[in-house]
Length: 144
Ligand code: TYD
Figure 1 (cartoon, rainbow, N blue to C red):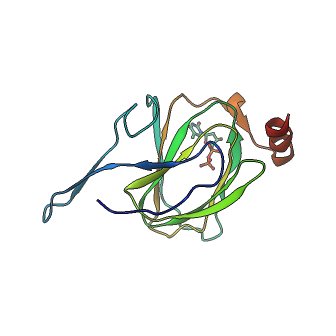
Figure 2: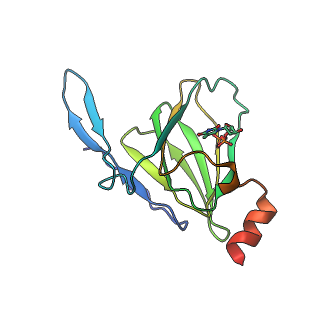
């Protein structure tokens, strides 16, 4: 099993380890199961590809209730996390580990390799009213 010594310092986050089978020389099999290694029942899956613009910045929001886990299944990118008190930048470059994006966690994705593919698992459907897209409002929300 690949190792990851990353220590997550922000609140409402954590590492999610995928189940890993080395089927050499026929590939790797990587598995996530709801309420097992993925810490919720998955209701929505989305992925982001075609990240050809070096200056792209995604995210720049927090959620009120939504639970997600974000993976870099190919290539790499930088995930910046901010819980309103602590900040942390993480290079995601392994398909075997995801990062929990819990509620009340401001997150930004940037510095994408052109082959980067991001996979996100979420515990609920898309709902714009669950987003906080203004950083000042986010700070007020987490500090109230
Ligand atoms: P957004 O969540 O802001 O993307 P990112 O965090 O990756 O930068 O979503 C971008 C747009 O896509 C936004 O207008 C809403 C829409 N969208 C959906 O309609 N359904 C979804 O499941 C998601 C994730 C986004």
